[in-house]
Amino acid sequence: MRWDRFCELCGNEALMKNIVILTGAGISAESGLETFRASDGLWANHAIEDICTPEALARNRPLVLDFYDQRRAALARVGPNPAHVALARLDREWTGELLLVTQNVDDLHERSGAKRLLHMHGELMSSLCEACGARAAFGGAMLDGAECGACGADEVRPDIVFFGEQPYEMELIYRHLRDVDLFVSIGTSGAVYPAAGFVQAARHVGARTLELNLDPSEGSCFFHESRLGPASQLVPAFVDELLAG
Ligand code: OAD
Image 1: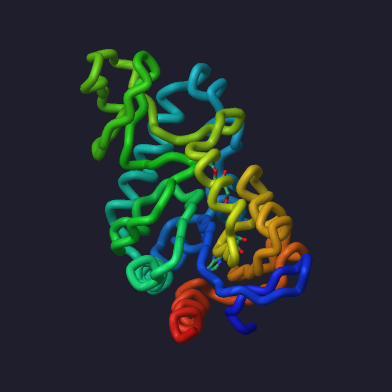
Image 2: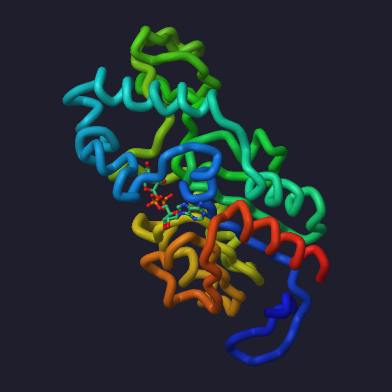
């Protein structure tokens, strides 16, 4: 693949400037974090509707808080892998527009130095107050009890976008997708919307689309190119290729 953009609609070539990259749990798998939909993944051992919905939180708050406390504790034991490091390098060196949208709630992108980053599904290292809506850095265990630093209420929950809730920053993400020249999806199964639909939004404006994943995702057929393998190998190679021009 050459990294010049060409318009799918008119065939004209233009300089490629705007990149949107979507990441999912697969990019953090080699750091030692479980993915969701692997046969031994998080949703194999817990039903989504018991953990990741507002109704689950209302029904069994300790269970939900404990699940995310465990994820936070696991996150403290791992670090970024070469795929995170390569994307941070791309963020530093790419002179055009770039937006890294992650569905991940871990902080491995920022720990590797990425700056142009959005967490559309929330963050483990953040809390959300149900009383006043304040979001704040959080590093402990919510089961031990947590109070909102802004209003003092003890209604603090994990800052995770549950199924049925609106993901963060959708307007900004779609604004970037309106002008995107290259859309890359890394380590995501393509099972969860709206993220799974970003590839079609990118195709609609004539962008090149590339998938880097261990297995073909559910939306694999929508991409111009799919490269299959571990992110720790595919992502650094892709970044080298892109920065070499
Ligand atoms: P999934 O668990 O659904 O998919 C992970 C993808 O990563 C799969 O397609 C794997 O083939 C791929 N993969 C695994 N190991 C990999 C590796 N070493 N290198 C490259 N790819 C690898 O995770 P997501 O697609 O991120 O939402 O899940 C999307 C959302 O569903 C999550 O954000 C979460 C979940 O429910 C919420 O919690 C709101």
